[in-house]
Amino acid sequence: MNEVFCENELKIKLSPAEYDLIRSYADKQPTSQVNHYFDTTDDLSRMVRIRVKNGKYALQYKNRNSVKGNVFNCAEQGIEVDKEFLQNAIGGCLDKDFVNKNFGSDFAKNLRYLGCAETQRIKFNFFGFEIELDKNIVDGKIDFELEYESTDDKIAQLTQLLEQMKIKIKQSASKLERFLKAKEIL
Image (cartoon, rainbow, N blue to C red; front, top):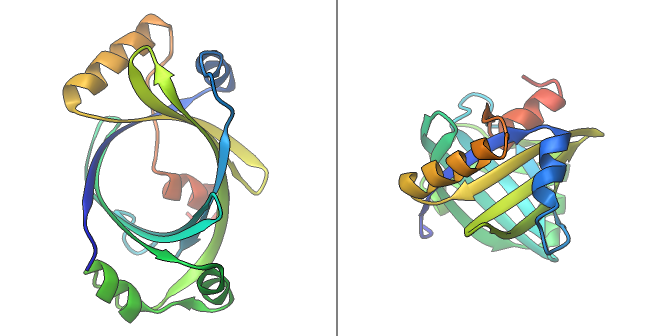
């Protein structure tokens, strides 16, 4: 089994104008990543995807422990895979035994492919906070989000700064849930 990383992540849904305002502080251009999602709709606290980023392929498993307001606490694991693995999974499904063995999960059935979403991400220092600013695209539908991984105290400080900038703190669902809604699966 792989090493488990725990994340405590603030997720805020942004309007296009709020995204543009925050993006105006970025000193970098966005990078693209594509998430290929597999069917875990029987339990939305779990997510399995293959992420393609910078020519690398990673099979990832996330298990949401809790959500408090806009803060998601998740355990995340991943293994490197290759393009052939992705193509085989898209053409068929992900073998539950392979996923369960690698991540200590307990899926009862193979995971069928649902589709993909592109994220154009800018990771940059925003007034001392290392944030990720995302533009997510699913079948031509676009949404915007700010993500920030840190302790509860630092998250509260960033939230206060955003409120001072007149950024409305709106609840954001997980990328998987927004993907499922955009695909009209949920």
